[in-house]
Amino acid sequence: DNGKWGYGVSYWFGTQGCCHGATFTNATYDTERAAVYAALQEVEKQCLSVISEIERYGEISDNEDDDSPRNSSYLPKLKAIKNKIEVYKQEYDPMVLNLFGW
Image (cartoon, rainbow, N blue to C red; front, side, top):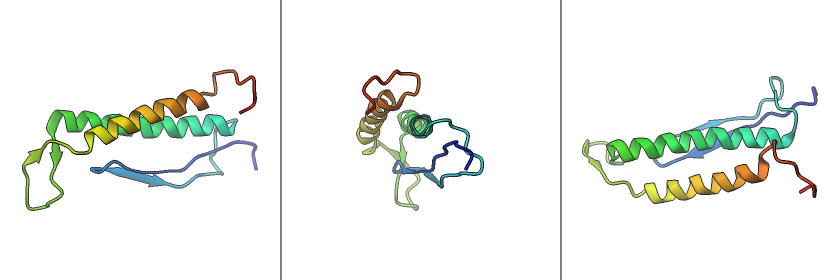
C-alpha cells in the first residue's frame, strides 16, 4: 500500500468500448476523488470520440453483411451520457474545495 489510488473502467458505447481493471501497483492518484475524476475524464474522452465519429461518418450497421452507414440511434443516448459525465466531473473535481465533506 503506497497510499495512492488507481481506477478501472468498463464501458460500451454501442459501437466501441473498453475494459481494464484497477491497478494498485502503479496507482498514481493521491486521493480517491482524483482517481474517480481521472476515470471520468477517460470515459468522457472516449464518449466524445464516438460521438464525433458517428456525427462524421454515421453508424456502422450491426449487420456484418451491411456495409452502408445509417443514422445513429446511439447518438441521443451518448449525448445524455456525456452530460451525465459532466455532472459527475463537477462533483469529483479534485481542484474544487469541498467544505462539507461529501
